[in-house]
Amino acid sequence: MAQFLISVSALERNARILQDVACASGAHLLVALKAFSTTAGLSVLRPYAAGCCASGLYEARLGAQHLGRHVAVYSPAYREAELAELLDFAHHIDFNSVPQWLRWRAACLAHPRVQSGELQLGLRINPCFSTGHTALYDPCVPGSRLGIPAEQLQGVDLSGISGLHFHTLCEQGAQELIDTFRAFEKQFGDLLASPQIRYLNLGGGHWITKPDYDRAALISLLREIREMYKVEVFLEPGEAWAIHTGVLRARVLDVFESLGYQHAILDVSASAHMPDVLEMPYRPDVYAVHSGGSGTPAVQLEGEEYSCSGEAGERPYTYRLGAPTCLAGDVIGDYSFDHPLQVDDIIVLDDMSHYTIVKTTHFNGVPHPDIALLQPDGQVEVAKRFSYVDFEGRLG
Image 1 (cartoon, one colour):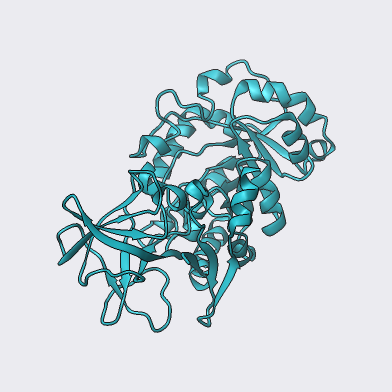
Image 2 (cartoon, rainbow, N blue to C red):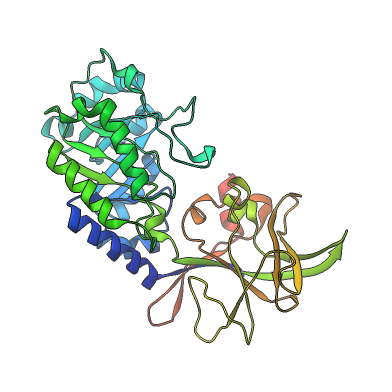
């Protein structure tokens, strides 16, 4: 059975780095549940995180239950019943557009938690400053629906607003955040400096736990913002909590030649289990498990040896890794190996914790991989095993 395997030690490693940044800067670092919401993993992050950021009611409820502390919510639009429930337990609710703010303003300001200051309300801003490289993940592309441009705030009644929020980055470093903040500051600095603004949320997309990330520059910026504008500062890293913490372990179901290609059918699907492979597109690092190998996937089991794959033709045996679905394009990619693949060989797809498990589906009825934790003592504990009941129940 295929398995998402997440390392507790690796999660703790990332969490300690992020906690150090929070302590050094005075900022609050939240877990972006859109990137990582495996409940067994959240219990590992709970001692380190200031709380969570959620994209709606269900994520907010999950974060409140499994992370506690601060719950920040942003959605492009709210339903009345969802907003009513969020008002009862969230700590920040940010609105995406002027019409959304004006529609829900009276109901929010009448709520006792808003009146007491326990719940604060904010606006998501679009600084219209792009630093990204993939349009699909760039909230500042022309025609974006995410956030409010500066000109749309002219003449708007902002009484009751105490926070500003922008989120423009995706897998980027400290300099991109600095550049974005300067652009934001130029347009919204006067508003940020006004006494009514009590918090600034710098969103997510920060690769803080990558080895080459300039954490000193980030800490310096966060301190500057807090000291200059007298606001609480929040960041919402997602994959920074979970990057290099998990793998997807798959098994070879069939190997055959067709139309000039050697195909290896795995028991996992790009479409159902790792859709970024098709959407970005994204090419995961792949390892074969066999004796005499050499390789270093993020999560390794004691006693196993791993051989890293190469590009097509780079090593002696090239295979097109495909899924057991009816989607013709459900292909992970062309990979080459030092040894021929055989049925029942184990293939390890690296770095499969963030933005992978949260996007999985039961497309085509392909069995869903287990979710398991690798404990520091080497024991593997299955946190969730899926079955036909999950497939049937999902479709009603």
